[in-house]
Length: 339
Image 1 (tube, one colour):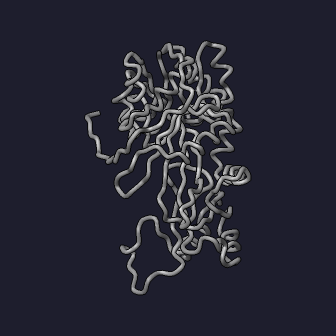
Image 2 (cartoon, one colour):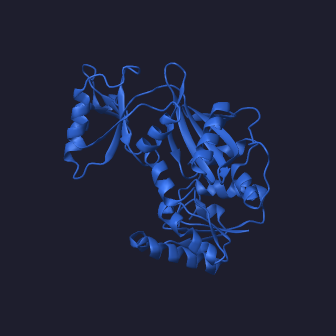
Image 3 (cartoon, one colour):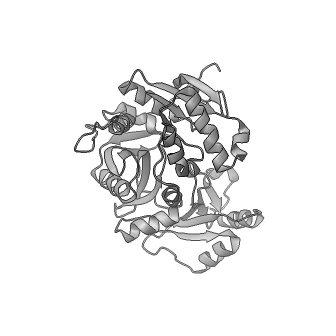
């Protein structure tokens, strides 16, 4: 099989490696803006994805990617960049004999990536979610804070994050009061005094949708899962613990992944995240319509999520989702190579 990846996060290199474990003859082509991407170590062929493709219309970008796929003989295209837009062109690719694999249609992907909409929908379905209040800009934030105790069931510090985004970009823990004699060096990079956050919001030229939430300090779980047309193929749960992560099978993580995959009829190597409150209840934080940056860690278990997807595409699948046996403590190290 010949697979094409467009511009992607570095974790795609791990995705490719895991696919090759199951299919050593796999031929992978990747396009990328930077030649120093780690994906270059895993792909058979790395092609430039010119910066000007960012400025292309959705139609023009879809045509550009399709032409690359045809020129390289790719049978399957796994997009990351502009995947929401590309989902609307799956029929165009199919008409030329190329399968464009996205998590779902454009509207569903957009819905899932907007955390407030997703959490409201899942809460209505009976799923515990992280409580939140949506706001835009300094004025709306100020009005929310003026209401007093916003989350009486979850007292303590508050935090904020954008309504959509990756890698926790924009996440901050709000400090209403600083300790006496506190120094700037005493604060972590994630902590921000309330007065500074208000000033920052006021200085931004354009407000963005954000979420104000209680800061829950319980264990955070990242559930990587493979699914095909709404059918769950397997899960690996990672519990984040300092600089390492514990990989195992979590029945609730599987149940939640099953519900999400089935509800939205999803396809791909995807991810969801939960966090425990003080009562020990796992609360859904988000669903990602892409593979997580930590997908490579799942390769330390006996469940190969990308392999399950490739098998399912050609009709090979088990009656039950694959489950990790045992537990694995995973660490991380840097990798260096000559470009």
